[in-house]
Length: 330
Length: 208
Image 1 (cartoon, rainbow over the protein chains, first blue to last red):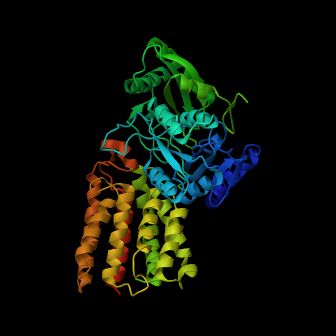
Image 2 (cartoon, rainbow over the protein chains, first blue to last red):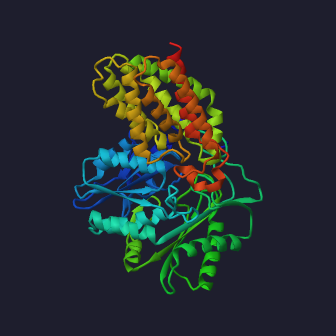
Image 3 (tube, rainbow over the protein chains, first blue to last red):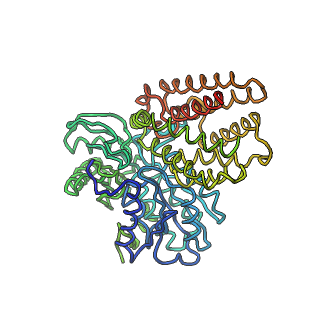
């Protein structure tokens, strides 16, 4: 394992402290319990949005704390859900009285810890669960689809509504709509290495890829020989379109997300391939996002998310945002 | 059950888990994401380190302190589930009186019941509940028997059988559920760590 690391026990603390210093104009980092919050207090009457999850997906979620997006984020250990006392402390810190909406990715550990955090917090609160990963069959016999990259879009879009005086109920409703309108699927070329483990999470051949990979290096649909980008992108889009079934002339946001180890050059190539394939199928792309937003440490690979947009979603997507990892309009 | 019993069991379990950590880590990498063993080890270390803080406290207070430590110090599914276990045990009535075998069984049974509710998992879903729920049922039958030591040998056997039975299951809960058929052929890491915990504690009670 080659990583910038001093010792394992301090890995997360040191990284969080650096994050706090680098973005001290936007956020504060609280340690023990750990949470990232906005530098400025939540204004009265504004619903607070809190997300969180295991670390190793940076900039998700701490990088999305700031105007127009989250009010706080609770980072767990690498790939492990945060603990209930973090959610409780974050909620107590940011809630201005209008209530707290927890945004939770659909993983058992996250669900349980956020549930307990919500039970421990005495103020008004509600939760939405994201589950956009179409690689996993959604049935009553599984935990269900995983919450992956579309969580970024949910946080941006609901963040804008909260900024524009949306109520807790309205924020929850919009978040659920965005989640329902989004589909994601990822592919990995290499494994990631959890610092505490010191070795790669899975073995994969030089000529192989994991199709439908999760954001923790957990296996996906199948192991395949690597193929040209157009073929990979085509297969991913087929799975997403099968699931989302966008109408002709419906507007869509296309989000190419890097897993951490793939250069932007390749991500833009993926974007071009995806645009061409979608155009040939009559799927209109009106908004774009390309970059490393929901990563798996140093994993090479990418995920593609398609989000069907109505006017409400488009309006809140375009609204100003100012966070460490996403900034426009201000 | 006393505070010193809890701490000495935590130390015993820590030793056994450390000895088997490589195996559990590999199991989790096969069907999960590899964090389970680190979470369990971190939790045990935190509990063992609490010794000086809790050793003179009443049982209910010590259990509560252990629960909060586990809940806030581990993370992941294990933190929530084991935190729930200790929190429920701490809420048992009459902890200021002597906690005999019967009472200890009742506490463990109620703790496992609360874990089941928190995790929304049942037997047959390839999780730690595949070991814990049958063990809880057996303890329920054993609790009023005076000759409980031979019964504990059966608990050890049940835990091992149920742990092994997870090998051929399809996972329908937890992270392994995303694997479908590919999860088959691997023992669930949570079932393995739970079985080791039960095995260690039962053997220690039998031998004392």
